[in-house]
Image (cartoon, rainbow, N blue to C red; front, side):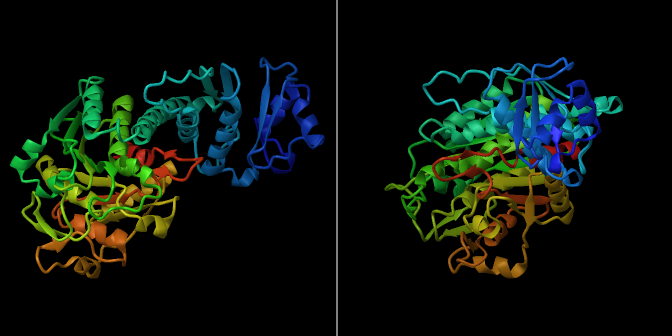
Length: 474
């Protein structure tokens, strides 16, 4: 039940309070709960209510109770429920309405948040964590919005399943989560739905295709690179697909341009783009989204060795353009550019790449918004709108020609870095040279794909919410 600031109850809360023999108003009057956002209080005196307990949740000012505050209230509720052996919960948190969300969004947020809060990582070699005791979630919604709420639950469950899949892949240590492991995950996923097919290209296949840029990154590793192609047909064959490309560097040492050792363990998350792309495909299958979707995942390790690519080497991409590798730690763009070129054969309605590409985007935007760059205002606006609707926010950065000029090389068509200035933008400018004639957008998720540090370290599952929202709207 929601309790708003200063102990205010909504119309539904007042009716429940009357059935509960004024138990709610009694604890409010006693000062046990004030309605401050995030407060919780469990009551066991329930009067005539057919319930064993009432969990009161502080929701802040009623007029400011929007999707963001609702998510916080739902999270606070699950924090309590998931630590107890309760089996059945009925949510009245949205019964009096949310300022910017209806029945569909209320139910969807509830389902998404359940998956996020109940997520537990399964350690390699350890038994699967015990399942949560909560078996049933219900939400109180005006009966005329029942169908919208049911759709919200279904879509939210699909998004939640996809995000959990993304988090599992991201959190798995790099000695387990290799390119071959990701290829195996793709094959397993393909068995879940007859509309989904998977193809895995080997290094020999890539060499025949001329993917010299991609192969230059894996040159120092003993782990074989893979190029994963997943195709989902949710619409008519004649409808052009949306193509998503996910950067899959399963571990990034920086190569010869070796990274400093502090926090290098977090470089297992450098396949966050690939993990997100997997999660989007998993959600599309779960929901049965009526789109044609192609997911391309170039995946390899970036390691230093006697055979590794050296700073100053020149490589030839699948497009025929040559690249001077000034920094081997700017490797993500080198695998993505060949994948973007390969994407042309699908004649995409839209082409979106996702990558933990630059540390510069973390400095620019922090952990709250991902960077968005695009050669299409239409696609950029659609993705920004999807992020706003799903509360998975992006911010658009420019791709002006002067930034492109920073990639000039004396020995190749372009360099793979453009200096210290505007690192996020010049990385996207590099990718833009392989997307001419296609509607393309780039999401730099280095700041949002995972939490670093010690206590809160782990994959977030972003930007699965934004991308699934885009697919649903599309």
